[in-house]
Structures are given as structure tokens and as C-alpha cells.
Length: 230
Image (cartoon, rainbow, N blue to C red; front, top):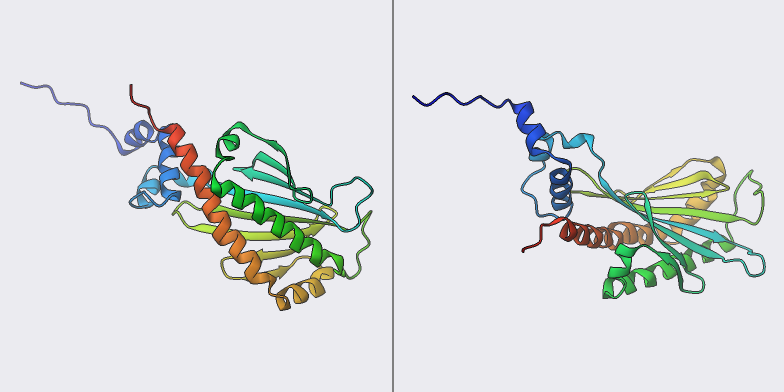
């Protein structure tokens, strides 16, 4: 007589199957559009883990001092710095090893080209930006963050936030092109930017370019996680 095998509970199956490495691999696959359905992620409790994000933080100074950079960009993947870039002089200041491997690709060159374009457009808009009831502590400096995030179901959510002196003034939800004024002094800024067609410009950058860049990074990371043959 064959002894009965011990039954495995659902919670035990989850703990066995959903190892950190497996969670990461499945979530990467979901973001890359190669996973069957996010209900399986829900089964394994994946709503408790972080999704993947791609950020570019722009710092634009309207009247920089002599020798000071007027445009600097910090790139982050999953909130970890991977790039520091001077978009005024088109010079990469620092780069992590993972991104050095992507440096020779056409996509990377296009990415830097787009960063320069965005930096120049923000500088142009900053030149005649008027803020109500706000006195900057120094030269007027715009801090802009573009982000795209892969949610648990594989959808990409894009957004922008704009601020001065470390304070948020204006937000843009790229998915529905909706602006939100955080500080009353940004009302004119919002109206001017809406009229100048910047809404579509920002949406394309955060929902199109950013989406493809995030997936490039995730694809590279997924390949590193895959077991290599002997």
C-alpha cells in the first residue's frame, strides 16, 4: 500500500513557488507583455511588491552663473540612479555599468537626443514663465520629473511634475492629459502651457519614448536573470 502523500496548502504553494527571483522574472515578463494574465500574479500575492519605474529628473536654471550648468538630468530606474547628463553641453557625467552595456545601441543615442530636446524646450518655456505670489530664493530654477511606471497588470502609467525651490507647482497625468495646479501661483503657467501644445509634447515623451526605454531596460534585466546554458 502506497502511503498517502501530505497535502500542500495554497499558502504553502505560494511560499514555495513565489520566490523573490521568480517574482521578479514574472513581473518583468508582465511589463514586457509576455505574461499570460496578471491574475496569476494576484494569486501569488504580487500586489505587495514594487512595480517598475523609470524617471528622468530635469533641473533647468533660467539665469545660471558663469560656468554653471543650465540643464542637468538625473535618470533613475526603480528609484536607483543610473545616469547623470548635462543636456546643455551634451555630456554624460556618470553612468552605471548596466547602462554602459546599452550605450552603443541606437535606442540609447535617441534617448540622449530626446533629453536634449526636452531640456531645450523647458529652457525656452522657463524664459518667460511668470509665477504669481512666489519669490524664488535664487535664480529661478525649474525642477521637472518625467516618470513612467509599469503597473501590476502590465499597463504603463505616465506623469510629469513641475516645481520650483523644491515645491510642487503643477502635475500632468499623461494617460488622460489632465493638468492639476498644486500651487495657486502656477495657474498662468498651466494656461500658457496648455495653449502652446506642451500637453501633447509631454504625453508623447512619457507615454511613448519613456515606455519603450523602460521596456529596453527591463528586457536587458530579464536576460541577466535568465539561466545560462552550460
